[in-house]
View 1 (spheres, rainbow, N blue to C red):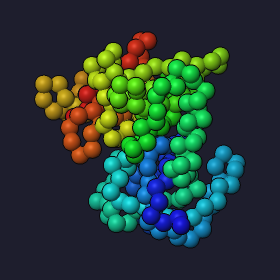
View 2 (cartoon, helix red, strand yellow; view 1 turned 45 degrees about the horizontal axis):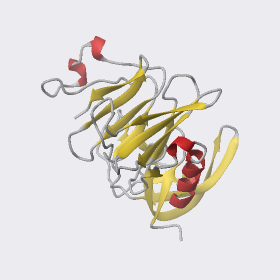
View 3 (cartoon, helix red, strand yellow; view 1 turned 30 degrees about the vertical axis):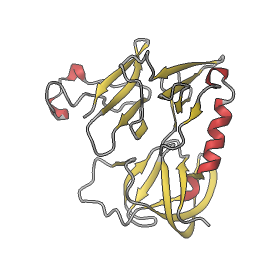
Length: 242
């Protein structure tokens, strides 16, 4: 049965969310995010990169902390009226299998396992600026720490970076904050807390970072604590977002 199941977003640019089937868009849910489908509706199809994708409109659960609302919204959103196209949704077990096939190719990860109890445990993006899509997995290490393992896919082989554990560059052993998604290239990255909270318009231009590749956003749900993570100058960097 399709309804009342958990699916995962597989659209690289995110799953568009609307107020009605084929209605007004108000945001999107990033790749790798869990979506609970409440009801399957009429059939629909789209053309993506020249390929026809068939599926249905579905009503999705509105209480989803992964929704990124569009900046140009002029009114509130009715969380009881959220709809999306299921052609870019994959069942949880299938999404886990796809992730584990990638992980199995890297012996350095053999003692780690996917943290599938989290709504987001796998995302993709070009995190190193070489034009090649990379994989990020939220995993549990042998000591029980929740880690972010980033596979930097290269033209010849790959390299694995880890965040979390005792050698974390930001002194964070665990990355269990539930909200996790890719930040698209060109998005302004900034800290909203320097001794006190501040708005974007108050941030000096020399403190705003714009990359021509992707970054990572991680945050607590409905609470302070989180930030932007990005690779620059051959190291990981952090900008606080309270």
